[in-house]
Amino acid sequence: MTTHVRISGAGATNCNGDYAILNELKTGYDRVWMLGDTYRIYYHNGWKISNAEVSTIFYKLVSVTTDGTTEIISTTGEGIEHPWDTENCIWVSIQANYNPIPSVLAITINDTISETYTETEADGTIVTVTKITNLTTGYVRYERVVNKTIYDHEITTHNRYVAPMLMIGRVYQFRFVSDFASLGYQPNLEDADPLKGIYRVDRMITYFELITTGIDLFKTLYEPLGLSKELYDKDFHKLGNTMVYKLTDVTDETSNIYMPLIFIEGTPDSTINSYNKVMLSIDIGAHFDVTLLQDIKNIITDVLKARWGITGSANLGVYEKVWLPESYYATLVEDRAEIRKTIYREEGNVLANQLFYVEQNELYKRYQDVSAKLATYEEIIENQ
Image 1: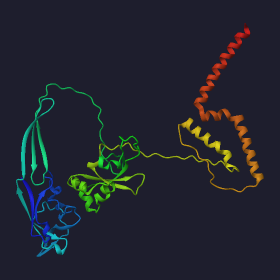
Image 2: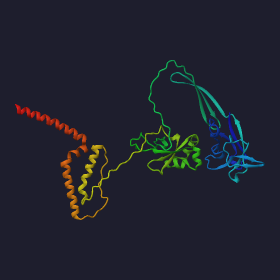
Image 3: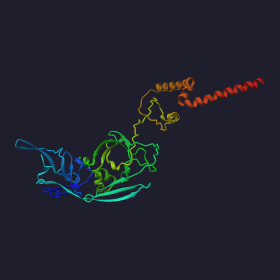
Image 4: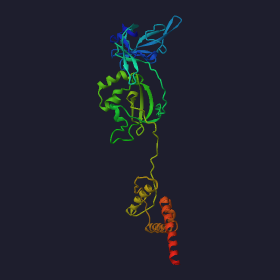
């Protein structure tokens, strides 16, 4: 037995008719009734009658209170249990040309059929299956009854990955079902971009809340990917029972998508962290001919690779012009030459150890071992 809603006498005549429950498992304010695929009765701050897309609202059920002999009609109908309730409430039209207001009645009909059959599982267990079909909406659900007798218990330890709950404000890497796969990470592609599909979860709302804000999912998600309106229309009834995430591209804060949960494939990767991209800047003073310093790029590049495993290349460029007397510049060149001689003479080994300390120490140790052996051999030869 199912409760449908009958609308009659409405000024917006296309709204009149018998509305079927969209999902008979829903209760309370989650219930939605549809007149075919054109009109809808739903709850959002009160019961409303609208077109299927909820872009036009025709009537709403509002509360009525009495002050003495005067009736006071509210602007909302929050807390009214059913759309057919009549006590202390009244349907009103959104615009005058929708008058007169409709009559709303609950009607109970038997619009389901049941089919029972059995299935046999691989281990021989008999499963009784009841298929229940709603003739009005086409909605099908299955009830399965399994009776098993367990003779032996075998306990096996398994490692399990517990999928994290998506948290607002957190960054994940997403994979999406085939129609929307290009928006996410595609590990099966030969040239897969490992940085693709990284988004921050900024909002989580129901699909019906989304469309009441004026966001057209077909225009914002389907159409840019070249997906047809027919595909969107097929998905429409499924979308009514799912949550929608607002995902913002972390590399472009102005770019975001609204992605229904049913289009997210697998468990998003929650191990996404923020890392610093670092640039090394060294002021090497005034030089007349920059081309004479080109070997600095190779030296720094080699040092970064050998010491820290950093493969980035160094760049050399002029950031400012300075005007100097030739005599002053000549003094700078002489000072640099003297510093270079001093460093090589007094701190050469220290500098080498700082740059290549592992290799330097290993080579020095080998040198000491060979020198000790050589001294021993020389002593033996001299004593013969």
